[in-house]
Image 1 (tube, rainbow, N blue to C red):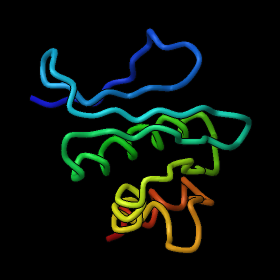
Image 2: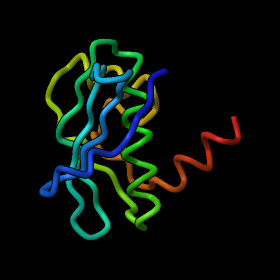
Image 3: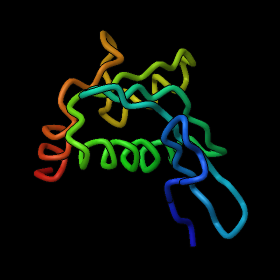
Image 4: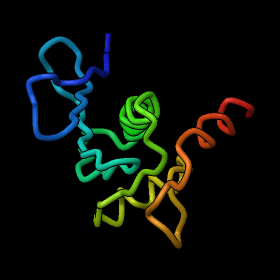
Length: 108
């Protein structure tokens, strides 16, 4: 069974790992500064896992009243997938309202 859990051993940034037992299938990491989370790492063996990883860290941020997500990622393939999952647009690597994203997503 695959789970996505926060790695609490990391103290300088927020890190979530997607694991099956001891095998890690993906990670997402970022830092929170006020009302902004900057997501700087996104790794996975399968691109379809990006969606769950990013949702996990965004939910964590939303629960802490963080409003905006900035994706500090330069890999074009990852950015393409983030666009397809609806986190960003072609024009912007920012998700301006995390709470609205989850509300709109739950209505579909």
